[in-house]
Length: 406
Image 1 (cartoon, rainbow, N blue to C red):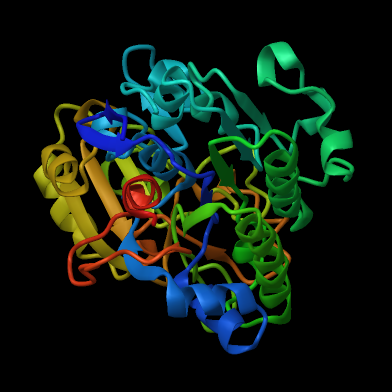
Image 2: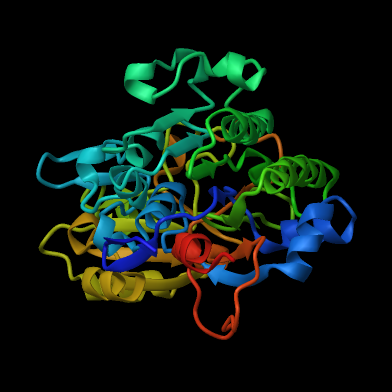
C-alpha cells in the first residue's frame, strides 16, 4: 500500500472513495438529540456499527484554524493559521487570514493530489476556499460563489447545473445543504478518491440542540451522508468547534467588552484587542466569541494586566504569549502579549460601540473558548482496538479514514 508523509504524519493512499466532513459548529449534543429523536437513522447505525469518540478541536475554537488543522493533520503552531482574523505588527494593520500567504505547511489535500489522487473540496463560505485549495490540483469551490466557478480556477464548470440548486443565502441552512448536495453529485459524476466537505454554522448559531430547526438540519445531513455511504464511500465526520449559549438571564448577550475595560485601566487606545472570530459574516454572532488576544504597549507589565483580567467575573483563563503558544499549540508570533478565554456562557468584545448587534434575532450562541472544544469524531467503518481513552483531536480525522477504514 502506497503511503505519503505530510507534516510528520504518514497516510495510506485511499483504497476506496474517502470523504471527510467538517460540520461547522457541531456541538456533540446536536447529534445526540437528533439521533434520539429519530432524525438521523443513518447516524444511529454508524454509531452502533462504526467508530465514534468525543474529540477536541484546537483553540481558538474558530473556523479557519480548525479547518486548516483538519486538512494539515497538525495544530496551528505548524500550519500558522491562528484565527479568522489577526493583527500584523509588521504593517500595523488588522486583516483576515484568508490568504494562503499565511499558511506555513502544505495541506494533505494538495499532497494527495500530487500523488495522483482525484481530490474534490466543497466549502460553504468562500473565505475558506483559497486556504483549503492552496496548491491543490483538483476541484475546489464554495457554495457561496458557486455561480462564479471556472475550470481554470476551481477545476469545474457550471456547479449550479451539477447540483441542481440556486446559490443559497450565506445566512441559511441551504448553504450547507448545497455543500452536501454537491458532494453527492461529485461522487456520482467525478468519483473523486478523496473529498472534503465543510459546512457553515448558521443553524448552530441560532438554534440549540434538539430544537425543531436543528433537528431538521441534521435530518437533511443524514440523508446525504446515507447517499454517500450507499455509493461505497468511507466517511469520517468531525467539527471545527462546538457551540454554546452566551446569554444572561434576560437572554441579552453576556459580553465583557475588553477594549472598554482596558481603556479604563490604562488609557484610551494604548492596548489593542483583537477578536479572531471576526470574518465577513458577523450578522449571526456580532463578532463576539470566547477568545481574544491583546497587544500591550511595552511599558505595561503583561503579567500585571493578566492578573487583573483574570480576576474579572466570566474570565476562565489569561495566558501570556509563550504560555498560550505552548498550551494551545499556537504560532507565538501571530498572537498578542496576552490570550484571554472567557467562561462557557460569556463572550469577549472589543469596544461596545463598534459591535453591531442589530442582526441578532435570537439569543446569542457562539464559540471560541475551551467550552466549545469537544467535537464528534465519527466514521462509518469500525476501527479495530479503538482506544477511546486517548486524547483524540479533530485533526485525526484523515488518519481515521485513510489509515483505519476497513
